[in-house]
Image (tube, rainbow, N blue to C red; front, side, top):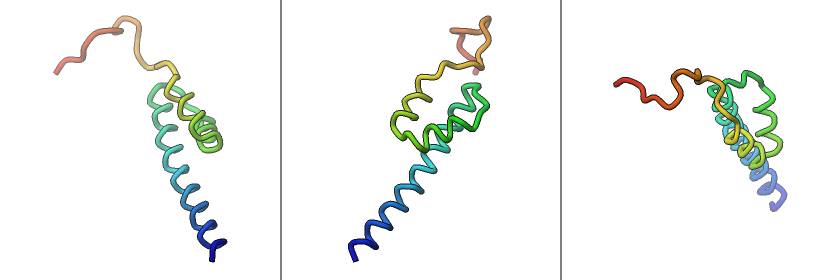
Amino acid sequence: MAALFILIAVMYLFVLDYFIAKWFSEAAWDKGYKSRKYYWICFWLGLIGYLLVIALPDRGSSPDTFGELPEL
């Protein structure tokens, strides 16, 4: 019975990690990094991968609009 509980818990963690890694991969994509490697880094490294994506600089902003507020 304990083995079944452990198996279900591990499967749950893999599914949860899949969705979190997908979310951080989309964040890297929005920052201008168009590669699937950020998904796999987040999936296999967990918290370290998430912090790596958070620390990525934004490639999408142009230098002439840096620091300006968007029009409402």
